[in-house]
Length: 221
Ligand code: PMT
Image (cartoon, rainbow, N blue to C red; front, side, top):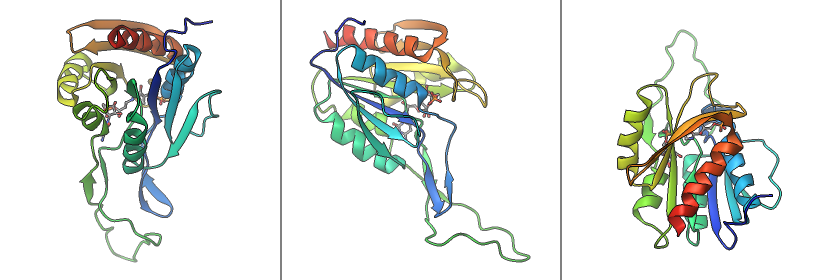
């Protein structure tokens, strides 16, 4: 059994991928399965934390002893994260959040019209939840962790993203159609605002989760 080094702490984890609806049957989505976020929730609970898991379209069974809040879109994810973060010691954003959503939601199914080109889909920006919770910390000393899903120039993009988002730690992982998304394993580098770089070798998503919590516990003091 794990050290109860998160006992008395409330942690918030987001997991899965948001879906941005176009009409009642279609959405813009991504390949996140939620497995990395659920591994974070399970390991935090095993270390004694009270865990709120904001789950976007995962279809995974609720981990034992964890409060699960299901959400669909980025806007709903934002509401749920801000609410839970109000009294949280740490927030970890493992969810893959859509940066954009369709400007218009068609209340009826979009039909193809004979001989006509399809209408373009106009997108508008979604709120950046990680940047927002980092800028307006609900509590002093709150530790905020982001994830960065990158396909190239992983470390350089990670450093830029850490600065832009304003979080304390950024877990940089490489993704692809068959890499990380949906898999049981991950590998990453965890970047800290203190300049630290913690490499995490290829292994189960739980192992990466435990290293993230080690780094959070160090920063909680
Ligand atoms: O779910 P799995 O199949 O296990 O896969 C795990 C994972 C690849 C989804 C996960 O490890 C991961 O990398 N999650 C973050 C994916 C992502 O959206 O990365 P990003 O680089 O687009 O965003 C950077 C950070 O900002 C993330 O913490 C994200 O939650 C946050 N964000 C992004 C956009 C937005 N509008 N609001 C946000 O809060």
